[in-house]
Image (cartoon, rainbow, N blue to C red; front, side, top):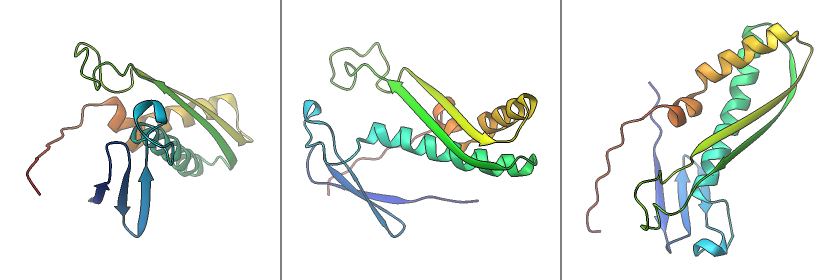
Length: 144
């Protein structure tokens, strides 16, 4: 079992710094959402996580299937309506309404091999699983 742990410190509504293992990850919002556009937003990091996980899984599973992948190009796109997190309409989702992914693989593979690779990547990518399925979340909030 692998357990990930991070620690985030926010210095304003829109900006934060997170410790991840030995790394520091910064997040900010675009100016229209109160930020300084100094780093990707938390929602953009979800897309980064998804794209990078799909890359890992494509290479990993291709190797299992005997497909030599030379490179990938992965585009992830998602849109959201900010009215719920802005507090003006609670009838819509606060997060993305949908996620579209296009993966281009540079490999010598048949259409059938690529179809099998796509099926396996879609089924086994942990970030896809977390986006697609409800994951129980427990949030505690207390005074510092």
